[in-house]
Length: 499
Ligand code: FAD
Picture 1 (tube, helix red, strand yellow):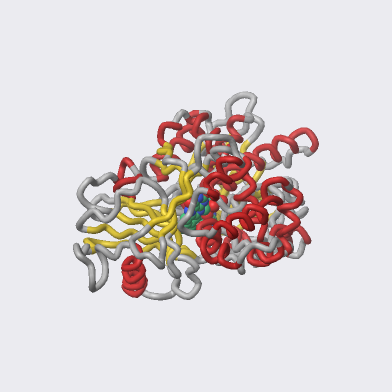
Picture 2 (spheres, rainbow, N blue to C red):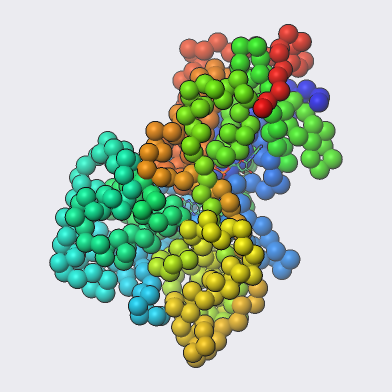
């Protein structure tokens, strides 16, 4: 492979604090690039695929319609994301919806039940929303529910972290919450937050969300991006990085981490794709913004045995499926996210109503999350669509099924499978999430799965990138930079093969 110093792609300005190669241009890698240029570094962000965004990536079909890796929601309780939008000057791209959580009612096909949050401070707006919902819970249940939630509101982050020892189902039982609360509300919420049921999910995940949702008045208010994330969010971050002297390159998959004799990184070996030459890119510092499953595969064997890296072994991605159904008529006018409360589906939205770029006044475009997906990820698209349409008979009985009054036809569909998405947040996993700073002096980590307080989410990814940039800056004074010859890897470097 040819040896390419990062300076071949970027020209560090006078006074640059050094070059940083970041593998992965999902939100974490892009955020890292953004905050690194803000701190005076010169990042080179390398993405394996030909599209930015990772789990928020999207593509156009042959008709020019976008299809996405996932239906994505932004919450009021995403401070770092909202700040990033402001810093990029694109805050008008967030389409905020009325402050309501809307649930389908499986026992009453076609009926929806709402938790409407009035415009008063949290947690009072949340309490009001619970008390005024009369469809889903009885009064005794509401009171018990309210009492059960008190620790989620009043106790701090330490308590939330401690609860990682149990599942959210166990936590509800411990709190004496009526069993129907789990069935009616928290199956839907767990599936929406982490694509699994509450008996599989760490209590920390739901408590983190509840804590933020109930304490911050606008915490559970939701926004949709006004179009496809690669264009509307990722590209502006990449442009920002490049305007400040950094670079973002597609089609640059990291293939091997090459080591010096002292186990620090000597270079990133990049596979040559689409006719490009393979190359070894060298820089002052190196970072992974890749998903945990991929990082585990690429860890050099010299590192894998180190306690820091060995500790991440139990982390792995959760399967999830995102479905797009383009229909021949309008089946919904709800301008918000909906909790399907269906066995197979999680949340969904009519994107022809909720998202400016996908607007269609005549025909619905449903985007639905299919979760838990472990049993379905290996099945054919046709089977998955047939099962989805069957579930829609309960949500939209007027338009689907044998008794439909006004049967809707599926004009076309797309099924996007992500076999390993956000890390599986089972009880006990918090202790396995690593810091952004590693024991290797010139190697750092970011990604939604690394330790930050917002779990596997867009906010978590963006925050992890920011924290990584801060970790690099914090190290600047205390760690001498490894001298890497700009002519390439010195002959004395022991370039080893990875496992
Ligand atoms: P990723 O997005 O996975 O980025 C990693 C990047 O590394 C990718 O671009 C990948 O291609 C690249 N890469 C991999 N291997 C290599 C290699 N060898 N060399 C170079 N690059 C490599 N979050 C919310 O906040 N709200 C939601 O509503 C929401 N809904 C979701 C729905 C679905 C279906 C899914 C899948 C996720 C959803 N999320 C949601 C979660 C959110 O998308 C993720 O938490 C976040 O995007 C993760 O960002 P990341 O940068 O950490 O990882």
